[in-house]
Image 1 (cartoon, rainbow, N blue to C red):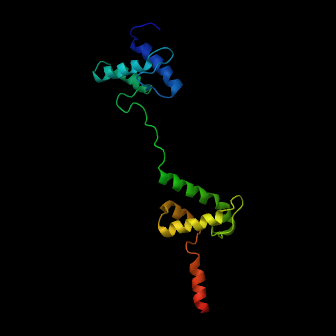
Image 2 (cartoon, rainbow, N blue to C red; image 1 turned 60 degrees about the vertical axis):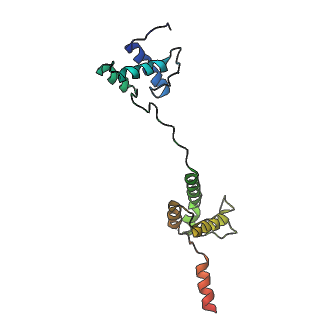
Image 3 (tube, rainbow, N blue to C red; image 1 turned 90 degrees about the horizontal axis):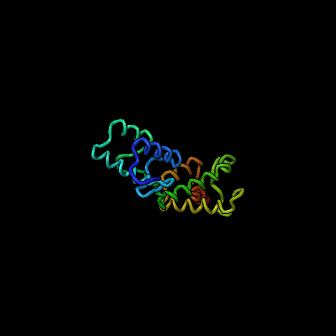
Length: 167
């Protein structure tokens, strides 16, 4: 590529090719693609837009391939889930893995020392889940899913009532 200016139609054709290869038409300002400073060309294109030096047709053509003339020029990277969101999705995933047990038994009240196929610690996990419920540290979505699977939050309430009747 020679030095010098690239006219609009040649630049837009190159940018269109870049957009097909990269999925967007908003390169970083220092980006070089196929030996051409495409990022600098797009930066200059935005400057011409801000100063009113682009025709309506040029603006429409650039926007048609995905050039953004106002910030943010690129989609922001998605934020990673928070610790609480990861914890909630882990709990939901664990409850989902108990669905075969739920379909067979109609509940997920697994005894603490027992497990289910492929998960020997399921009973201990349910006991820990009940403890979190009692402390009020379970997200609402987890509570709703567990209750939809007929969890009994207080396993001792029935036994205590029976013991009172015996005495």
